[in-house]
Length: 100
Image (cartoon, rainbow, N blue to C red):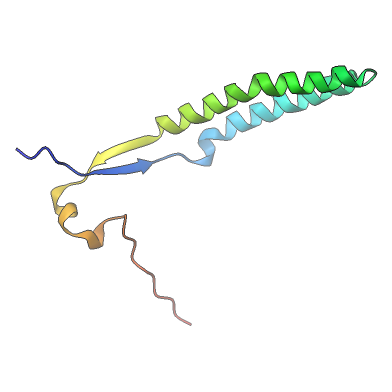
């Protein structure tokens, strides 16, 4: 019994997977800027508002990105016929020859 299988790391993450998260975070940033502009009579409150919203929203954004990334990582067992021929493995791409 062979327990030493080879695995292929596949990341299926695309921009469309995180597009909604970026849009929502941009809305939060623009809302914080609007709140800061409304507090411009006292600049210290304006800067504290921007800082508070950024500090509170950034961990949620990072958590969303990391969990989305981890949900799109796959490990697939490499079949024995692909394991023996390194020319067909995706880890060693073939150089394309261009014509002038």
